[in-house]
Image (cartoon, rainbow, N blue to C red; front, side):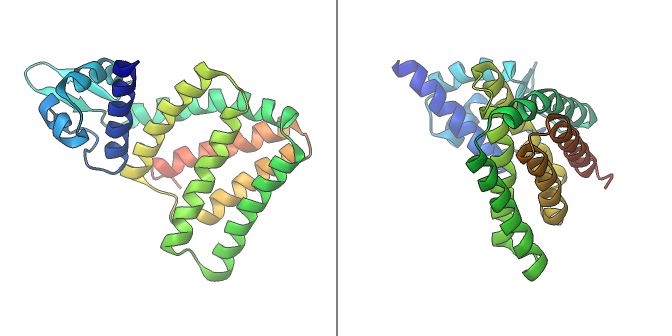
Length: 216
């Protein structure tokens, strides 16, 4: 149990530092550097490396060390395509099963962000809140499946999506369209329109992919 807890702590520490840009996509790091970065023991880092490799977050390069996953066209394509596969099933299930109160809460959260953005513009604080609403919405969809394999796999892919956004684009400058796209999904969900919700979600994810690639 203690070893498993240490391994999980090392993983959480690594991913937090990755999202904070303390290490960057494509960067080479050594196990010793990860010890310094995470504050974990060398033994914990050695236990961590196979998981990071299996999840595609690092690659071991002979003679050079470990390389943080690089952001390239293939990663963007694969991550967003996989996101569509998972979230289509999730939004269909959630449309059928979510409580009316939860859907209304989602609608209000998005509408409040949208109204504030349209009335007063997008401040740094609003941008941060919009980002949390964005992530929370997609997490809500996946969590509704109550499928641990899907949830864990989604979390890894979501981490890659966040890295892509961090390197290539963020929600800033896109708060209004993102909130509007989400609201279209929620509107269909509240109407219990499964196909409408799936179509609106696929439209949103495709636009997110285009934004990440600088196409919109």
